[in-house]
Amino acid sequence: MTEDVHYELMRSTLEDYQLEEDDATLLDLDPQLAPAEPAPTNPVLAIVGRPNVGKSTLVNRVVGRRVAVVQDTPGVTRDRVYYDAEWNGRAFTVVDTGGWEIDVTGIDRSVADQSEIAIREADAVMLVVDANVGVTDDDERIVELIRRSGKPTVLAANKVDSPAQEADVAYLWSLGLGEPFPVSALHGRGSGELLDEAMRVLPKVSGVRRERPGKGPRRVALVGKPNVGKSSLLNQLAGENRVVVDDLAGTTRDPVDEIVELDGRTWTFVDTAGIRRRVHMQSGADYYASLRTQRAIDKAELALMLIDASQELTEQDVRIMQQVIDAGRAMVLVCNKWDLVDDDRRAHLDRDIERELVQMPWVERINISAKTGWHTNRLTRAMVKALDSWDKRVTTSKLNSTLGELVAANPHPVRGGRQPRILFATQVAAQPPRFVLFTTGFLDHGYRRFIERRLRETFDFLGSPVEISVRVRERRQRK
Image 1 (cartoon, rainbow, N blue to C red):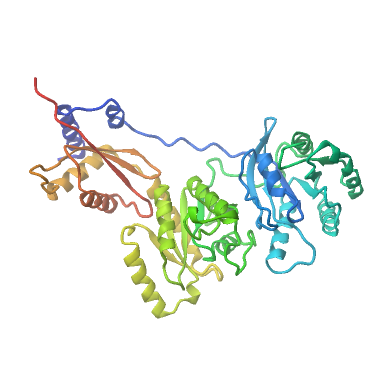
Image 2 (image 1 turned 180 degrees about the horizontal axis):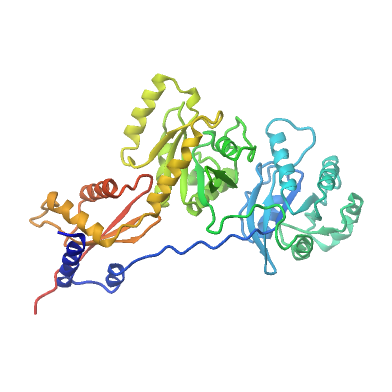
């Protein structure tokens, strides 16, 4: 029997069953993916300054929502983080940076380096100073750095919470950056005038930002526990120190986007904060970082789930993977730090993965070392395969032909004297693939898993979750 004949036969059987109003829409559905709009090369405004002068608070004010992690503790922001913003009909990109300081070492030096890169890769700079503290040595050194860059600059005198304080900012003219704009990032005072000046100095089109392809790069979130090597992997793929890397666990607080070209394809990688524990058990910066990580997963198409191959697989690793699946995203399991793994540990890890991930056999595994770059060239193929599966659509005739053969060879067990049958099936969406089965009765969860497994084997959904829902329909009463 041909696919088309089988399709027509199964479709005709539905005429004997009571269908609901939206069933007809699903049965005739042929969903098409809308093409992605080209991303404009918006101008880039870097916000820089010493630690704890209110840069992230000002970023939230500019963007119009709480996107950057804010806490009274200095040094919460560490990487340079890009956000889309708009003012008076003009779109631009704002860059939040960590605090810049003189003569620092370790992670503080790396944070300062990120601020310097942000200045170099921006169209204009907004220097934020604390109007209540005055000009410090660090402020003067930052001014020298900005002058050498030659970038147009807007000077924001933050923490001016009342009109009485506005006259006190006149001393900032001495910095030689032009008029200081008094502003209260916390309360919004003066932010309109500040943004008007920023729009004046920003070009209409970025002179530093790379053009993105017309359809836009695929978004890939790097997720996992703290200190599994997410930032190291991003730096390795980008070929530069794009994000701060330190032995201190939890270095990354905000999701960090980076456009990277690998094997002739352009990708947007998103480095995320490591998820330590359940969100409701967290507080402070970790709490908000976890919320932003979840948002980054939701906005991504694919997740690279990193685990430390030299350590035991934990419940938290499995929970994060489930978080990705619940979001409906494609996934590749990346076993990092393979240079630290011996033969005994490899065997133990294999057993751990086989036992703990028994419900996720469709996730492809890649062993790498982000530190040395070993086998990172294998990631592109795995990512392309996972996204192809995530995008995949199966024709209704092929789907019903496959299920017809499957059910004939492996019918559902009899339950309560009845044997549920699959009447018809259709794929209602992709990204991830979603299937609806019209049946004469409830399907056991084990039988649904069996169907999912066989669909995966037949249509090769490696790397993508597959969702199957069942609609039970009763036979029409004869008149």
